Length: 423
Image (cartoon, rainbow, N blue to C red):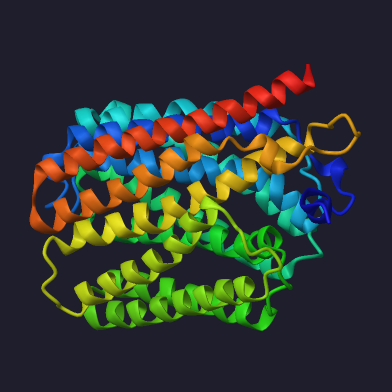
């Protein structure tokens, strides 16, 4: 069975021009490189980071907005219409969202490093507008969707979380200058929670219900557990928000317990997909993906330990690093290794008139280098955080930079093969 053909199921009329999703992926690969460079510059501040402007905040947003959000938007524009069997209503707003959010990210990041209120405001508004366009287009698609209800439900939850992220993010930017928020740090924590576990988390967890079984050739996942996971995730986010609003550590602790249960259900679902897989050799991409599931549970355990009062050395920074780099970045890098060649194959016809094999569009060496560098960087930076060793963070950031360059090389090679075949 052809994997692309099986997934599309005759839905090639819902394919977007290749340039639309790929521009988001290229930008994400560039911001991936920049995130490691900025982390290197601010390495001395990572271990004790608990908020505030500077290089670490900039690196964090290069990762969350530049890599995570752009990857999610590009993938959603193409994969969501296929999953829901509803085409994107219009493509020009999708293109416009890129040209709004793309310049907004570096302007916002510059403001975080420089501390300039104007750059923060302009960058924040541009990014927010781009995200709102994405939200409107995605909501329109979900509104018309009749298939894949579990994916659609995760999508609606992600969009609601995104609105919260935008509102709180703009409030935090204004608070740097006006100082009207009573608990800036608490709101920043809520902003991060909604962004990582709400917006990105629900998108990732929703798409996983389709993408993981597709890539491993397994049976469809039992929907009742998908709904259970969704309910737990939303309950955990609501409890977390209430705990932050009330300043009640007990409610936040309950949120941590619910969040860990949600993570456990999700990992169980993914393991269930692997057990029924007809494809046993899954390649390096699934080394990253499977590791991300472990890091998700580890990050949630660290977070629970923190709210329960455990003494974890530089625990706040470690929690953020494990969740952002260990879980989310590992997962997205692994899934992009599958999605980018997969989408490219849909726009290329071989000499037989059929799409080429995905292996023909996937250069192995850059991905092998990225895999080694990614895990090495994660280990070095984690050690540097726990032991408060700036040099370990610096070396880790340089290794991560090398891995990001290798990943960008992979993206460039796939695009070159795509364009040369199209010509």
